[in-house]
Length: 151
Image (cartoon, rainbow, N blue to C red; front, side, top):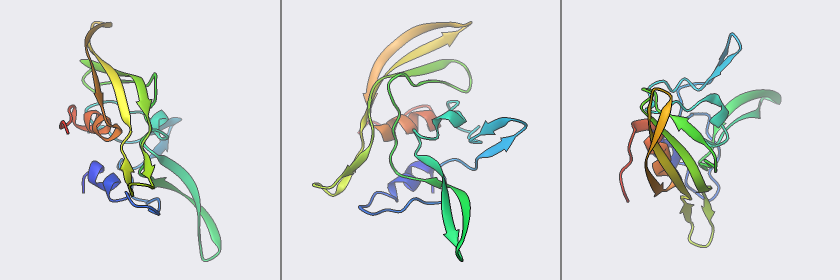
């Protein structure tokens, strides 16, 4: 199941957080924290855990507590988020954003929105390529694959 389908599988009224993450794993080595998402088109670092709804939570089994990384379904990229492509040729910067959330009245997931500016990067200079808007899910698709499908 791909990352986007994994999130969609949690779109329900009382969906529980899952221990399967949209990133392969989270590691802490030599003072470096990583989401190990090197195959994504953009370098989305460890600092974006909250935007990806990834949390380190306490769980219990046989009355014993343990901590585990969990995945929720609510993406929340926010104003000011700036993310560079892995190949260094592009940067996207969020100008305005609304997080995802459960719409109880419609009984469906509200996908939120992201308005962002895309820049071409070359030799430490940035050239504005355009302004775009999409849902939070489409923005995640852009970060993973380098583009997203219009609705």
